[in-house]
Image 1 (cartoon, rainbow, N blue to C red):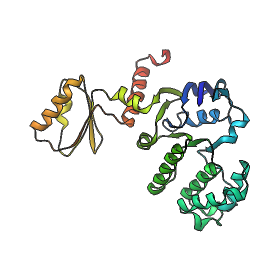
Image 2 (tube, helix red, strand yellow; image 1 turned 60 degrees about the vertical axis):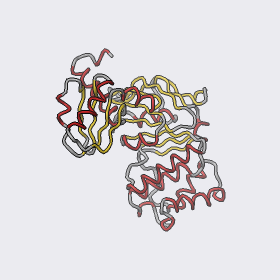
Image 3 (cartoon, rainbow, N blue to C red; image 1 turned 180 degrees about the horizontal axis):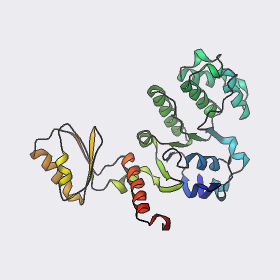
Image 4 (cartoon, one colour; image 1 turned 90 degrees about the horizontal axis):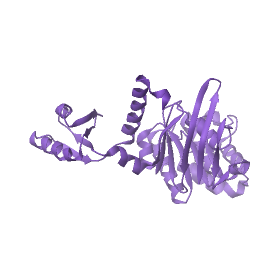
Length: 309
């Protein structure tokens, strides 16, 4: 549905996006994952024709995007773009009208969204009177009220408390159920893992990995064990067949050199009477994949090979 081909963008001597390509299938949630400053926002702005790439192109349904693409697009920018002196109600109606909707067409849905985000009692307040979290909720409403076919969300969870993060997560999933396509950028790995079907991992302007999340987890999850436990299991890291041992507080991630050793780890834990709450074989979390990818880049860079890759 949406295809990014070999995008490049520099600002002076800084290469913000370096030959990035990925495909966003129809009716999915695609997560562009990376740290702050990785190039996610620049990539998104080129993907929706706000910024022109130095090289590369973006296709929608096989055709190069143009100004008409914005008619079916809902876009939530990372920075707030609201008029502070306007009221909440006037703001969301104004943005709907910019997308070609009449006020009477969207009034009912606007009230529903205001109720959903607990803003109905604030609809006559000026934007400047709202908290940052409530301003973010207003901006979310302005990006979806016109019922777009494709929704692009740049760091949508920024400034939201856990309750509203959950509300937005459900809203995104509901949009997918309606047959829509969602692209979101985020550095919050656990949220991306919960809702995304496809991901692209970006670091310093380069795309390190992309594709179906399930397939990527299978690729990196072989010989990996997730152990939720209460007792000390640090003895595992000294075993000859353990290639990686990482503690995450509530659980420990262990990678063995061969899948046949997974049962040996389980047997050792039983022999030492370790209280194991959960033992998951061939599983890996998105955060671990991200850390491993960044770690491999840093190792190559320190070894002098990075520039030639």
